Length: 148
View 1 (tube, one colour):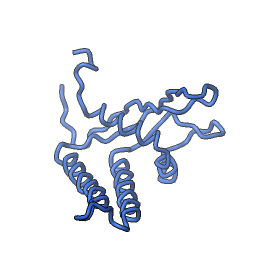
View 2 (cartoon, one colour):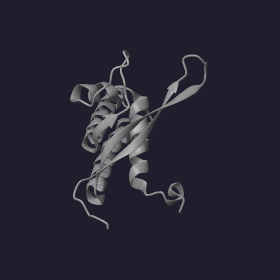
View 3 (cartoon, rainbow, N blue to C red):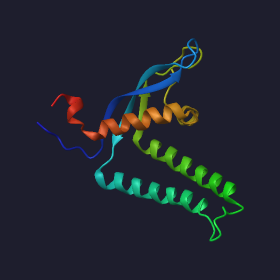
View 4 (cartoon, rainbow, N blue to C red):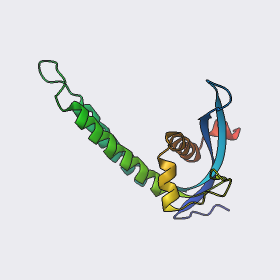
């Protein structure tokens, strides 16, 4: 029987690509699992719309003047827009990421899901890319992937 729950969560594999320290120019795929909150369509759209508004700040930052020149403060505007977008993305991850498992630290101790460890993980682009890809897979209902 199907049960409609108000807060659907699911565990999903997260693949993280890292440069191979032993093979120059090659990557290693690492994996852990993340527990995601699956947002409803309305909430997902709201998040996407807000992010699109932030992306417009990038466009405005690089708009050229009528004489075709970039504004003098373009670099400062780009940095500010990037910082705002990064903060927004981290908050969006925090909204959908409930837990993780299968991550250890340098000493091979479990790297537990805490606010501090979340902040540490979000400093790594490869983790952010992996989480984003995993969440999109989890919500896409890709029938080809399911073998249908």
